[in-house]
Length: 273
Image (cartoon, rainbow, N blue to C red; front, side, top):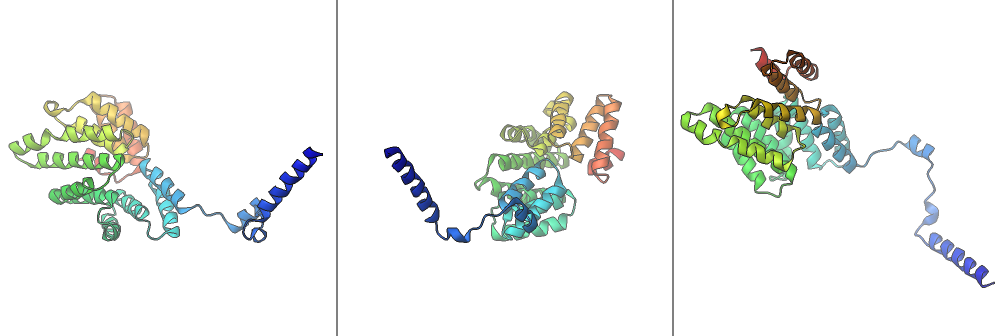
């Protein structure tokens, strides 16, 4: 009898708690079929995260779609706006990229990813002082390991350009700092394809006296292509590496891969000059 009473009390308590929820009777069950008819919309934060993953692996068109989806749910998503700017930069639509970056930086002047992309645009224009200023601002803010790595990578690239354009003293001053910055970037984020590309390109192009090493270049560029097979520049640089290794079969393979991904790639044009 006591057992029966106990079970009745438990059942009664369960019914009380269920029905005691606010407006329980206004929350009808929704079937899978009904959800399918309504249309499922992925939460913006998931779309953003997916977009960032796709951006890292160089699946830029899919990344763009996810950033658009995120912005549809939150028009003030600065990370998604930056993501679109980065995709445009990669597609060499530099003015459109800059316009989106300006929108982000007006709202948050210390948005680190935008400062890094802006630094690249300044670097490409030859405004090395402004490019470096953007990186210094980024590093003076709170920055995660990924973006810190990209910042150090940009410092390495800026120093490389200064060494390339400068006189003997400039080459001595800046050229000896390149590898330090790039290796630091790799320590922070070894899974970033941009970082592995930059270090591999340094090893490929630099004189041996400041650290150039063909075997190390092959390791870095192969790792980059493994991480991001759709990275045209990485494929083109790896092709250059194999050409220096006199492996024409692999040279042709990676040249064709780069050409398939991006026929207008700047490294491919450089190789044809």
